[in-house]
Length: 422
Image (cartoon, rainbow, N blue to C red; front, side, top):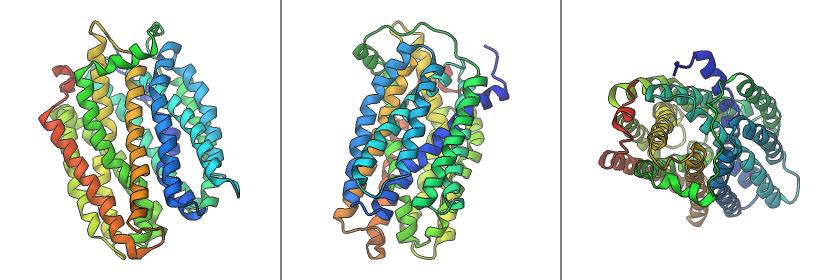
């Protein structure tokens, strides 16, 4: 297969930008918006986030199966984008009453659109290349656009009025416009995946097929541990900045620093993966994340500069978390495709996204109520030490466990593929 041109990679990656812009408010700003600014009890916000994310996660294998039966990834994507736009407009423009019901309904619509688009889009990318290094280029291009989208989402609310209700409402309008442009570019100009027959297997057979692949099971286990390590800080970071560092005015700067470092690091991790192998490069990134982030629990008011350094170094490690697991997964799928009982891409990504969302659900549904039980409430610096410990040390423990598991039980999707050799 002819290597993809940079223009083709850019056209494919364009949709990742608005999808990432949607993800940051969902996982970072919503707990603070509804549980802090709008006054819903923190435990109630956590319960709603947990329930809707669990429902969303359970639906992902079904959506993956439907995407495979549909056959054409771009058509499934077209159906998803209006749902995502409508849900984001609703969530970030809440009414003055009925907030709990509004939050739950808005999340259901938004998650449905986001999941449909993400599963079809990721499966599309997995079909674009047939060797390991080209797959890393595809995922790397997608994740660079992802980080540009996250940086945009981190910076825009402050530019539009702040990380509050009015700033996020204006952000929702800009988001819809960027979603239309990014989605249009990908749908119009990205290379089409090879045509394949729509899947005809039943749902349960399709959902079980990826789990029969031992390489996939090992990768999922590592991904779960690493994902929980990332989910807890993403849920608590705004509270940490406001109540531990007492520097809410620097929120946008911290987030931009973190995600910009991640974007700049992706080419480094792609090159290192080709030299060391993808799994070894990912282990190096996990250890770097722990070494950089573990110091955050000692920070307090006035330590903004130190936290910015931590954001930069841990953000550098983030680039590997974004580019390498998805590339290893594409290798695993390719190895399965050559076997007698191959599973379709949508089924793989349906389960993959389910696991991603379970991590986020557990982070929100357990961390927020646990902090409330420990006596922490937003705006209470006196309880900030409990917040700092949960925010920092718990993720480091999960990250070390993920690195150890990958070292002791490597995925080893077919050797030549795992090495990333073209």
